[in-house]
Amino acid sequence: MSGPDEVPLRRLVVLRHAKSAWPEGVEDRLRPLSPRGLRDAPAAGRVLAGGGPLPDLVLCSTAVRARRTWELVAAGWATPPPVRYDRRLYAADVEELLAVVREVPADVRTLLLVGHNPGLQELVSALAADGLDDTLVRVRAKFPTAAVAVLTWHGPGWPALAPGAALLTSFTVPRGEKG
Image 1 (spheres, rainbow, N blue to C red):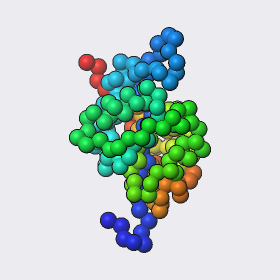
Image 2: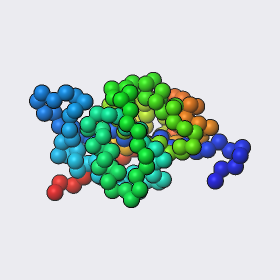
Image 3: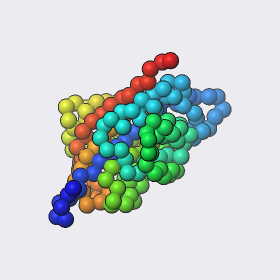
Image 4: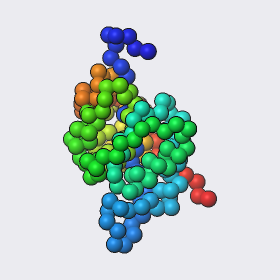
């Protein structure tokens, strides 16, 4: 527990939606997950459950593939955190993503953001001043579907989150097994 003068440690967990299908004639926002995406999303949930405290809050894009990814991630957790679906996260750039994150209440210590590329990759790259091992190099090279990046930083609240303020502590690309 932090004392009154300590600035709390916060975690921003960034999850790119799982692999989507490309059915003909289906609007981009309505694209479903592919068979691989249906396998990878639960694998991402297992990685998140084993990687530290579960999120206090989830912010998720309203696109079908992002919503379904979150549903499959959360299905493996005994008590999923509250989720807010936000249409601003669809096709958002770094500034738009940061604007949504900065609205998060100060009592949220761990936040999960479920969305899309290229915005998520650019957000992680912008926020991370450094990364453990080769994590930052890997994120900047490629941020595949179902990838999970964890950023940590000390701050009084989410409005203070700024480019270069965080440390990228992990980057994982979970893959489910074919059945």
